[in-house]
Image (tube, rainbow, N blue to C red; front, side):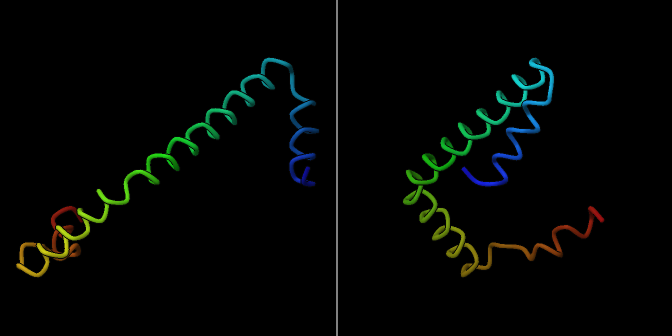
Length: 75
């Protein structure tokens, strides 16, 4: 266990039980979210490659717009 993790546990243990539960729930949800995103990205390689190829082809055909120009009306 790292020093920072030990510090986290010490600080969490000083909180009231309901706050400890809330914090642990948030940490576990964050870990689950990270795992889900990792899984989704690992399966999306071909899809992302196709999107990148489509975007590159649009650029070659002159179908894209400079981002700075696009954002001017919003500034």
